[in-house]
Length: 354
Image 1 (cartoon, rainbow, N blue to C red):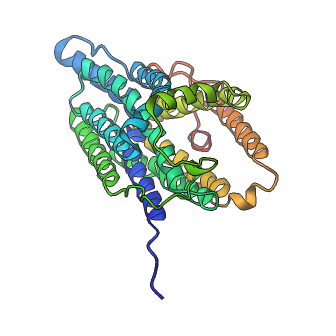
Image 2 (spheres, rainbow, N blue to C red):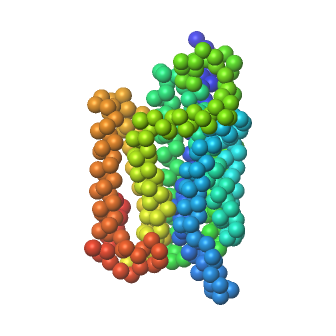
């Protein structure tokens, strides 16, 4: 009996691999950005007597502020140029942003941050659209699980590389930065190239979630997509969910941009502190993979009592982790190297656990 090629499953796997490579590069870059910029500032000051007038925190703020604003028009962009080209174009901007750290400049950092925020909105909107096109009510859970399982490997692989590359380094020198960002740029480029392997929706494919309750399977017009975005936001369900979205945004910003910098600035851990940024990111990645596997791929077993207990469990675990960080990390560590103690002497096991 001949095997039937499932183009939808193929698309989902390639989509997951593309995001895994792209976000192995970007999430790793995001976690180390402030640390790298601080090292660039120190080296610039030593060579020229002037500061490098930019910070990673400002860059990340610009990225996510633009990301939030651009989400309103992203559906229109995706409706106009299609999800495949949207993801490919967005991936190129991600790659160029990472490439810019090989030779950091203030104007390229901040301009790139604006462009990246817009690209992120388009990329993630297109991803949701493309995953939906390739799923129906029977395969959506499976396809989402495959995609998120692959995506969540991104923190794991990228930060293992940082852990070994930064071992024993007090500051990140030019040569080290160039090596790291060259590798990250290549990984991002592989992710972008994988977008080219995605297949178009076939004319005979009408069994997908975008076709539900629709008598005519047509491409949505850009203006209609924008109007529908505002209509959806004004629904009771989404207004309630927006509180959760705001919290998860703050939490993601903390672990992806602030926490790694804090760890690298704890003087008590000496020359191993910078390497612990990578180790912590790896452990976060492991937690994401375990959580994704437990509540995503095995969701049919863990969702017996609904999703509310899962969300509550995640929130409680977050609060415990934040409390341990509060006890363990000096209050001034997000800004500069700190020789202070927090409420307790900085503990490596507690850092890894939190």
